[in-house]
Every structure is written in structure tokens, then in C-alpha cells.
Image 1: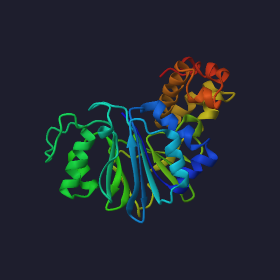
Image 2: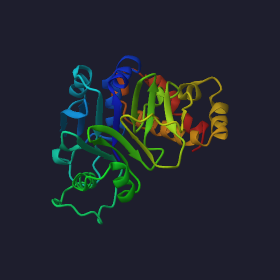
Image 3: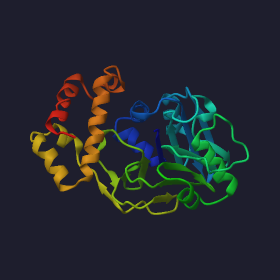
Length: 289
């Protein structure tokens, strides 16, 4: 599994100014499920104007590019290697023209996909990217036919897009005309213009379309986890909406990783101090998932 983001510049700047900074957010994505290479693509006037990827491309460099580059949309991906070795050629995104790019979160069986140039170490994401590029087919139709369980972000004919058959793979920050599709957000963001998808159908969005309407705002995780009535609040939230069970599972997973790695970006950033982390361990005992 990997982590990926698609958004407009106002979305990234909202994270930078209102949610603790780009370095914190992007580092958190890498810390959660990435770290084997980062990539970023910038789109302006329906063309890819800048593209970087490497196994050691730093968050500081990406964050500065996100601030200083003149772009309409940017796509970020951090890889957690599953298929293929850890090397630059296997880092996402796969960019084959000034108006085509693709990145993937998940894994696919690509044995039925034929491409003209298939290396032994090629990732499933690159196999899909090359096959789609060679076919010239629209990503919504190609991915619907040839994939089963992953989330995809990319650029097709200069338009950024998001495709997923799994409603839990992508979430959305939407605040006025600022937006970011993301694999996930730190649980501290929940309840602050962060939305989760509620439809079992395939999600497809591309530049020019309205943002999805089949979404609901996530609960305020800070209040549920740390509030005065946290035992009852957590149980009541799940009773009221089963979707909360999945979100709370994510929170507990994130808390576990924070507790297990004391020298993480959280400790360094002091956004969660050790006392808070120790207190949050009890979430497991308070709510059995």
C-alpha cells in the first residue's frame, strides 16, 4: 500500500497555513504507508510543467515546490514497495507524455495485461500505466475493465483524475474552492472539512467535474478520543453510523504507530506530546475493535 494526493494549489496552501504545514502532512503520509520513494507532478494549463521522483526526494524539497511553483494542480505519491524493487524507476508517478501520468495505491494481478516493453522488475502500477497509455483509452473505462481493488490518480489529456472502486481508499478535504483528494488524513484533521465517501459505486473525478456529492463529513476525532465522555461518545458514534468503526480503526492504527515510534515526526513536531500519546493508548481498552 502507498499514499497519494491530488489537489489544487489552494488545497495544498490550506494544509500549509491551517493544518500544521506541508512538511508535517507529507511526512505523516510517508510515515503511515510510504518511504520507498516520493514523486510529485505539477499541472498548469492542461500540461505537466514539472515532474520529480526519486527514492530520496525529500519532503522539504517537495513542500517548497508546492509553495513556489505556479501550478493549477499537483499530484503527490509516496511508495511502500510491494511489487518490484526499491529503485527510482519503480517510484510513482509514471509520466509518458506532457499530458499523461499515473500513480497507484494498492495491488493488482496484471497477468492478463500485455504491453510492448515489460521488464522483469516492473511494478504492477507501471504495467497498468503503460497499457493505458498505449491503448489511448480513457482512464475511467480502462481502469473499470482491467483493475479490481486499487485507487489511481493521474493526468489524462492534461486533466488530473481520481479513480477508485474502494470507497475507503480516498478521502477529501473540501473548503470553499480549495480541495485535496488523499489516501488518508491525520486523525487530528477529522471534523475539519474532511469528508469520507459513502457510496459503494466506483468513484471517478477529473478536472472540470463537480466534486463528489456522495460524501459525509467525518466526526470530530479529537472530541471523541479526548473528550470528557469519550467512552460513551465512541460507542454512540459507531451505533449511529457504522462508517465510524472504520474511521476509529484508522485512528487506533495511527495511534499505535505513534506510540511504537517515539522519535517520529509527531514527537519532533510536538503536535502530540508524550502525555497525550500515553493517554490515547487507553482507546484500545475503552473501545474494543
